[in-house]
Each structure stands twice: as structure tokens, then as C-alpha cells.
Image (cartoon, rainbow over the protein chains, first blue to last red):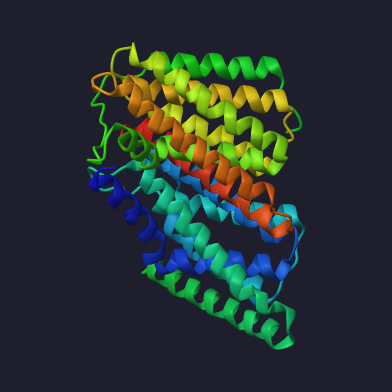
Length: 173
Length: 204
């Protein structure tokens, strides 16, 4: 493994963690999955990386997706609102909603490889970091079994939604 | 995905072979550990994600299906890997095709996600095909090395150890959430393959 290859993994791993918009939305996916319980709690973390990678692939192939920044901000707003209101749509609707947002995140973040770095390790790092953020959300979501935890999760959803509004404001400015 | 038909498997084999045959000439490299060719081969495998991850994915898949599948894959994959690499030694130097690597990530990751209930014969064929293809690509990269055959024994030992440990670990998982975690790992593998495919199209 060459030095550039190791750097590729680190770059890919740190990229999603360093963007607060991405962090908020990914953690919200985990929180929502934890609120919804099975099977959503595992369908969302399985489906999200795949659809996100499809978004990244579209970006790499030069397929433009309009309104990326708005889409990412909207994802934080709607996912945060879903957690805040503890919404329970059918699983198909939930998966489709999360999937659409995954395309925006993959398109925006999955394609920024520095010259000389390994594309494979960058991709693996990027996907693994995103998965870890989902796991963080699910881990926090464990508190949903207690009444105070349910309130806490709703408050966390509100924080995510407010963050989304902030990013939307920045995108519009 | 209930069963992988033999005709579909044959199609996959033909596609894989076609991609291998059009592999591009490039800089074959073998990292030296300073501890001899056995360890060079072992480290080459452990430090090459394009080889390591498909072997790991196959181990996860076999482990999800049970001990019989794990045992079959544990012996089929390293033997096929060794045979493929010995064939590769006689070929011109090539580098592993990124497209081929991506397709293996996608195929094996997808099967892990689906917790595909493959028949034992299909698992054997899959392990053999994976070993032959990756071994061939490894072998072509080591033709210049003076101790290539010894190196390949080290490499296939690494394949054997990895698949035995990983498959055995998954076989003994009983908790529902633990098996789901394995399938999530399959999702990560497939997603990495999909992104890698994009990079291949772009020409990184």
C-alpha cells in the first residue's frame, strides 16, 4: 500500500465527518431508524450507502443533479422534522425519501479525490464514515425506549431541522 | 435472490474472463517486508484492498449460510487462488482491472446484502471463480520476482487464514442484529464498488 493510497482512505473517511450538513443528515437517518424500529432500523443503513454511491457515480460520470446544496439542506430539514414529529410513514415511503436525499449527498461529497490518492480506498473511507454516522444515530436512538429518551430524540430532531434551515439560508444567500 | 442459476453464473464467468483478458499493462508491484518471500506474499494480500475485500465478502457470504458453506469456501478459494496465480505467472505483466474489482465488490456485496440463499454448488463455483480471477491478476504481477512461487504460497496462506477466521466468526453469530450488521458490511462493500466503478468510468 503506497502512501497516497493510505491518504486516500483518510481523505475519504474524514470528508463526510468534516461537513456538518452531511453529519446532521446522516445522524438523523440513524435517529429516525431507531425511532421507527425494525425493519427500518436496518433497511435505512443498508439502503442509504448504496443509493448514495449511485449519486456519487452519477457525479463521476458527469451527470448533473440540479440544486445539490438545496437538496442537502432540505434533507436535514425534513429528516430532522421527521425525527422531531416522530413521523411513521410506510417503509417504502421512508426508504424512498431517504434514498432521494442520499443521491444529493453522494453526488456532492463522493467525488472529491485529491490527485495521486487511491480511488478505491477513498470510496471505502467515505462509505465507512457515512455508515459510522448512521451507527452513531442508531446508538443515540437507543434512548427511545425511555419516555425521557423519546423527548430527547425529538429535541435532537429539532436541532437537526434548525441546522438544515441554517444551511438552506446559506445556500440561498 | 433465491438461487443463482448455472447459466447466469456462466455469463458472469464469461464477462469476468473478458475483462481479465483486456487488463492493461502497468506497474506490477510487490512490497518487500524484508522477511522473505512468504511474508512478502502475505503482506501483499493484506495490504491490497482490491484482493482483500472480495475475499472478506465471500467469507461473510459463506458464514451467513452456515458451517458447510464456510468450510467449502475456505478450501475452494485459496486453492483456486493458487491455481489462478500459477497460470498468471506465465502471462505478461498486467494490473488488476479497476472495473473487474468493482464488479466483484458489487456482486459479492450484493449477495451479502440479500443474504442470498445460494446452493452449495453455486457457492463453490463463486469461490473458485473469485480465486481464479484474483489469483491470475496477482500472478501476472509477480512474474518478475525470483521467488514468485514461494511468494504465492504466502499470499494464498493469507487468503486461507482470512476466509477461515472471517467465515467462522460469522457462522457463530446468532443474534439478529449481528447478522444484520454483516449485511450492512455487505452494503458498504457494494457501495464502495459502485463508487469505484464511477471512478473507473471517469478515469481517475
